[in-house]
Image 1 (tube, rainbow, N blue to C red):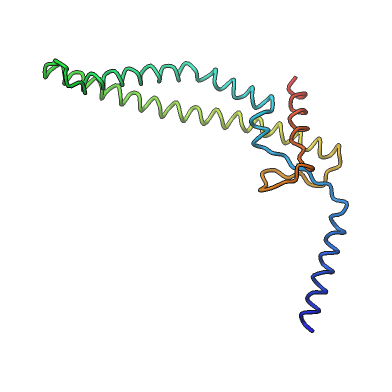
Image 2: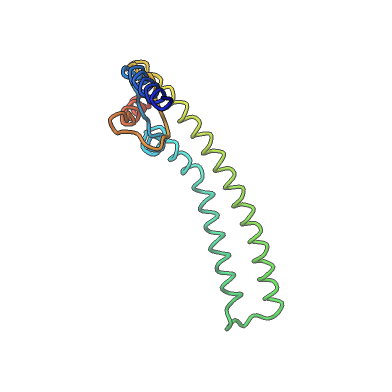
Length: 167
């Protein structure tokens, strides 16, 4: 008797939930794709690359110098005197410390700028999503889900609207 009652209640609840969601309009936005393809996101990435290119080149130059010094110090055929060797080791250690410090600062500054730009792009994207949701009468727009049917994917609309907004 209890099993029948439970089964009846379960079937009734499933029917009610289907009726409740029958008129619900749901959309999905792939935010990773938006951050990769949308014009504001691409421009933000280009600004960051331009802003940090000189520092990155400087770090690459220092890394090459370190590599060269290390090869000189590890060369078994090297004819360095003990004092020259010590001077090179000291120079290597000083340069390595400077490189590590600069690398940390570069990473911190880069992360900070990326987060600033990302926040700006997310803010603009959310405005566009809300505008589309209201204009097309969506009940729910989902982001970052495990699976979404391509039928409800509105990512292309968002990317196009962001491109139009960026002009």
